Amino acid sequence: MASSDLPSRTVKPKHDESRTMKAIAWMGKKSVHVSDKPVPLITDPHDAIIKVTATAICGSDLHIFVNAMPGMTKGDILGHEFMGIVQEVGPEVTKFKPGDKVVACFDLGCGQCFYCKRGLWSCCQVTNPSKEQEAMYGDRTAGMHGYSAMTGAYEGGQAEYARVIFADVNLLKVPNDAADEKYLFLSDILPTAWHATELGEVSEGDTVAIWGAGPVGILAAHCAAARGAKRIIMVDNQTYRLDFATSKIPGLETVNFGEKKVMETLKEMTGGHGPDVAIEAVGFHYCKSWTHAIETALMLETDPSEMLNEMIVSVRKGGRISIVGVYAGFTNHFNIGAFMEKQLTMRGGQTPVQKYWHDLKTLIDKGVLDPTMVLTHTLPLDQGPEGYKIFNDKTDGCVKVVLKPQLMAAGA
Image (cartoon, rainbow, N blue to C red; front, side, top):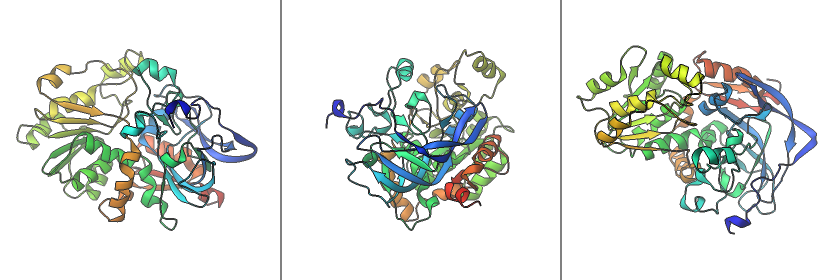
């Protein structure tokens, strides 16, 4: 099937207006509500409808929560990390049937376009119709669940039911008797953490510095250790998150940038050279200086360059920089001179989940990787607004929140 023969990217999804479900909807800056929404229906022959059993709040969702991501509309259903039980499949779905337990990936590939055939699922040319993103970037990413119109405006999985397009490509079957938490994070954060180590070419004996002690940063440290990194250093300013990370990753070293200067400290820790690899697992809406706070407020830039510049000046000459924290647009004061003169390599990108998740499932099954280490809070779906608040505000020791629709339905 040629990409020109694929279903229209702009087809309007169908719903059963006679049935409603609970879903987490974005209502504006720092405002998400539990709303009644119509249940999605099969719209295209390649679709599947999933009854969601577990869904998570991702750090990327916080960019939406604080209204830092363009293209949101009041009432949009959030969530791109979810799994559940297949309820119905379209006539062209061949790999799944009702009753199968599946994980859905956040990035929506078609499986047939130029990019999907090369394993660049998150760059799919078919699933995202956004003209705005094409104007900004000169091209488009794949569509993504529960994000903005910039990524296709697909309904998310923080709901009782979700529609997954191109189900044969975008679902992964897991054992029906397994705990949801064992495999849920294959939807995004574990493949993203592994992708970070792939982009940084982390290998035996490397010293790896990771900016951000959130779920992706902690799992990136976990993956780096599995790949044989000699030293792993985590940079953050939240003491509780650094302490949590060190309790999960044996031998992890930390730098609290609220107490120490990052570049000087990393140089001291590495004999004056700096780490071999720097991984950015934070994203674009965090400003560390008044300069960038003012420039972003005045829309003179969309994304601060501070952490990227820290990585550029901290990493050793000839080092590698990996960016998996989300960036949206333009940045000022980028230290391109140091990047060029130090002969650095920088790579970034949204994770092609489908490229990694089969191998990562095997590593989970063998006990090499345990993504559940980041989970701190499990809440009913109808407590999703509280989950967003504690995750964003970094309170109650929150590192990762999972929401369970069935707990809500049971009145727990």
